[in-house]
Image (cartoon, rainbow, N blue to C red; front, side, top):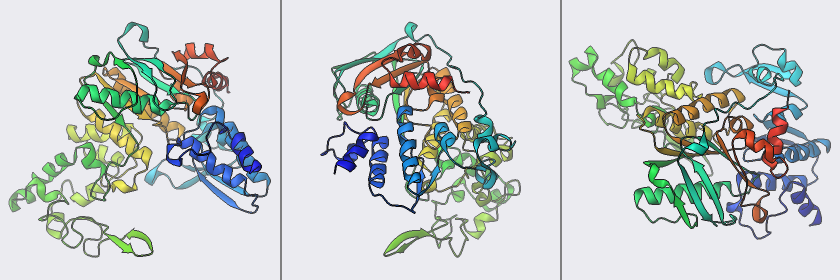
Length: 480
């Protein structure tokens, strides 16, 4: 018992109560609890495969995680880690870099070896981005002191210690702090639900606080989370973003479709007259395997195309509706270059780094990070009048360093349109781009829930004596 408890302590989880319910743990806490279980097993000759173990971890805790992985390695185990975190990549004995792009442009071994070996390969995007260039604050430093703000007063939900926190409007705001410091409780439970209740005049449960001031400056509040954009294969990115109806109209306007009297609905796999009757437009119907997980197999009649023969006889610029849905978003920008409404929507999806996705890709196959960015693209397509408060929880999850830059451009564009964007984030690239930073802590659990520091990135650097984030940020900027 002492061995197991000491491992939890070493991984920075000494503040957790033994009776703590598992579903109340943050992502970073749950990850380290599972790692402690493996460290305590004393197994050797095991190959451990971890998929982005740094998700939800503060930069301070990354070092703890890396040391724990090295301990497992030194016992005679092999550790394979899928990771985008710079510190973890630098600590690896061997790096396997795949690419050079994503989707159809990826799948090749670009480089392997030490980081110095990756830097010698021109095709390695990872090697180029970790090439040792000195880092600096790149925030636009919007004048947050001169603009209206929302103030949360007396927040006491979960571990929050009766805090009062300002959120300047029209800014990119980063909410930081170690794992378990109260970030999600403040932003998602207290602020988001509190604003939603006030704006929509509802009375749903929300994080306890004395009051929220300044909310009358907003028209709406949106949480762009990692939940799926749909739960069935019928839900696809093209329909979610909202331009599939425009594509169906294009097919209905072709000479063949007009001669046959086909309406735009004919080119929807949710309408009986145009879809494949065997799979009812699913393309890959689900086969239940009793004791094994369900599998999806291509329809024997339409071969996964979703539509019947008559519908597939109609072509637009030499492509059937099934061919169009199999295009990637990058291909679609070229194919629909003459159709402004479609090209604009497709371009926004490419702008958030998802050019490799297919227009008709079933939503259950999207990762949480991909689903979140599709939702961002949907918001960008809508004409914005500003005055919207966007809340995102770790939007850099699963993103390569190059894609983080694309995401930052999208977030800045939302702010330029008069909106406010608040992100819970540990990624230093986002922190150095933020106009305003809210740092909670100083630790997690009962030792967290306090406002440690707030202000611009340059003002945060002056708080390195009390803020773990400030210390890690200062160290990050010095890296070359």
